[in-house]
Each structure stands twice: as structure tokens, then as C-alpha cells.
Amino acid sequence: MAALRTLNVDLGERSYPIHIGSGLLGQADLLAPFIGGQQVMVVSNETVVPLYMERLLPGLQGFQVQQVILPDGEKYKNLEVLDQIYSALLRHRFDRTCTLLALGGGVVGDMTGFAAASYQRGVDFIQVPTTLLSQVDSSVGGKTGVNHPLGKNMIGAFHQPQVVIADTDTLDTLPDRELSAGIAEVIKYGLINDLDFFTWLEQHIDGLMARDKGLLAEAIERSCADKAAIVAADEKEAGQRALLNLGHTFGHAIETGMGYGAWLHGEAVGAGMAMAARMSHELGWLSEADCDRIDAPLVKAGLPTRPPSGMTPQQFLELMSVDKKVQGGRLRLVLLKGIGGALISGDFPAQALRSTLDAFQQ
Image (tube, rainbow, N blue to C red):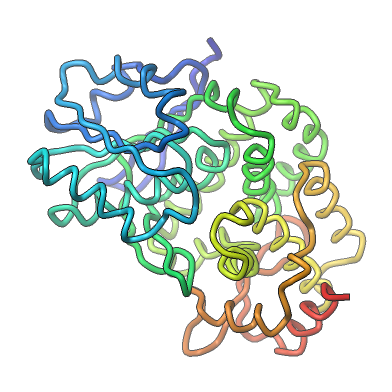
């Protein structure tokens, strides 16, 4: 068993630990201290349950445990499927002392967190992420929610978990495409504000794709540490936290435009980061060499660096106008002034965005 790595998300009364390591599923000492009452609702999906539910349950002995098993996929991250969680909680008469536990990837985590934020106006929940993307990103920071046909993650709430338990053993069964999608979010942290980490990723991207356990654990820890620092400084995304959306405005447009699930979130973010880099170059903020340097680990990770050929610039503009970072009718984008130098800009020339989108059509 690899050594347990633990770091803390410092949010005062809402602070919580992130545990990272091998063989963590089912360890009661990591779970029980964060369960306030007796009732635990485990929310998972059809893919994860046969793989990991039996490993988890020994850690919940002594509690009243029920399960909700959701269909698997981004296209099910909606209000209709969310209602299955509420219905199960009510059917089993779960009260305000209950705890919801998310066992799965980002979709399960986001939906469980939103159910916890809104059930009886807020109950506790625990994140047990089973994909790389959810271990390095969506399980940390308290963003919860569901998609709407007109926009991704437009319905949700900020609701912090009690603890995050990232068992690296769950990555053994992760499909290659899902591993690549998670690497996109890892690369993102280096690009935002951690040039040393980006350089480390350049050196170790092959080992990460080969699923080296030690390298994966280090990548998860460094990603979570970078995110925890930003969340601690700006929990509700009033400013700095929006930097975590590098590539996401372009990426969310791809996900919505193509239909949820056609491209994985990390795939869309990979292309989105490449697009943000090219727009930064268009503005004179990033060199051609830096753009190529950013593309290189994305390509090695098997990620797209271009948007889908079927999407038009006009479609991008329309979808990007329905984005949480739009303020006063003005779109704000996360762009780069050098690798590790992300910034939020809302005063860029409209033609720069249009030229970038047009260039990717050629």
C-alpha cells in the first residue's frame, strides 16, 4: 500500500481533508469521523457499483446504508435523474442528520453534492472520486450542479464536502479515454499558475499515461494543492477562482454544441485550452513556441487540440454567451500571459475571439 498523502482545504469552519493513496476504499477510520448521524445514502452509477461498492461498504459498517444507482454518463446529469436521489432519500425517510456519499466520477459527485446542498436545505456529503478527473478537480472545492439543455452546469450550488477520499487503485479500471480526460485538468493547473508543475508534467507525461502509481499520486496531490489554495482564497468564485476555468468556456460550448457525452469533459477542456492559448497568441500575450509547448503534452495525452470540425464560429459565439462568466452582457475569458500566468479578461477585442475561432475552421 502506498503511503497516505493528506492535504487540507482551508475554509475555516468548512475546512476538510483530502486523502490520496492506494487501498483507501473501505477504511472506516477515514469515513466514520465525517458521518454525523446514522443514515448514509451512497450514490453511484451502473459502471462503478460492480467495481467498487463491495470495497466501500466495510467502511460503513454500523451505519444505516442505502444506495441509489444512477445511469452512467454526462447526458444523465440533469434534473430528471437528480430526482432519483431525492426520491430515495424521502422513501427511506432520511433526516437532516444524514450523509450522502458520492462514489464515482464527476457526474456522480456533482449531482450528489447538489442533492446534499438542497435536500432539507442542506445535509452533509462525502466525495469518493473514482476517476482521475474527479480526483484532481471536480471532487474538490464544493461546486455542485446539473446541466441544462441550453448550458452546462448552469443549475447548482456551492456546497463543500466533509472529506475527499481519492483511492488511486480505482484508476486501474479507468478506460484510457477517461485517463486522458483527467490529464487535461492536471495540465490545466500547470498552465494557470504553476510553471514548475507544468515542467514536471512535460518530463513525466509518458509515465502518467502508463499509469505509474507513484507519478499519478504525485500529480493528484499537486493538482489538489493548487486547487485548494485557490479555493481557500476565493470559495464562491468572486475573482481568482475563475482562473480554474481555463479552457472551460470554449470546452463547455463544445460539450453543449455536440450534445452532452459526445466529447468527454476533459477532451473538451483540452481543445479549449489549446484555443485559449491561440487566442492569447492572437492578442500578443503568448509566443508561437509557447502555444506549441502547450499543445505537446495534450497530444501525448491523446487529447484533441482542435474543436470538432462540425462546429461553426457562430455556434461557438452563441453558446459562449450563455456562460457563468458573462457579466453585464460581456464575456470574460481565462487567457494566458505566458505558461503559468493565467488571467481573466473581459476587455479583449471581439475580433480577436472571432479570428481565433475562424482560424480553427481552416
